[in-house]
Image 1 (tube, helix red, strand yellow):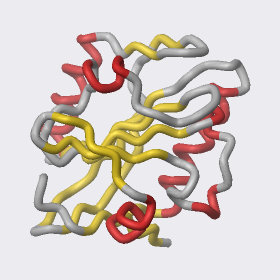
Image 2 (cartoon, helix red, strand yellow):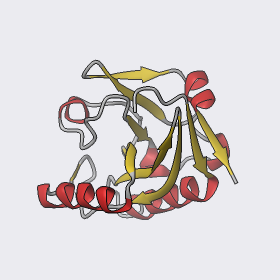
Image 3 (cartoon, helix red, strand yellow):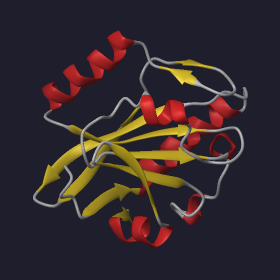
Image 4 (spheres, one colour):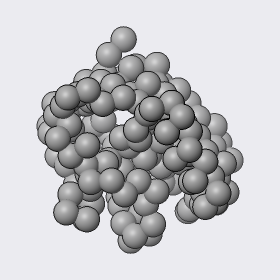
Length: 156
């Protein structure tokens, strides 16, 4: 997955993800999601957003181990890969030490996207309001907005 140079993200999936995040946010809860799809050569097409079983607080979320296992089982059944994990923060977007050390996605080249304000951001801004990290050499490396906007293409 580290060789991916283009990620196709349907607008409907971006919209659905933010809608779910906002629903959790109405209760002042962080939320977690995974974007899954198929890789072909250096392009990855996101096919769906998955919302696993999770336990949420204002400042954290937890996905039980059995549900992480079930995610992997479903990925194998559908012949999908997970490209990005996303979660909200109540205020500013940043990667905490918990995000660094307890990520669900651990494959090199995976993305971790943090959405501020419980997802209450403008969908028109695409990734401009989010913070995007990529797992490179076992470390989460922040990507510039310009790099992210070149890599992720929102499609209809």
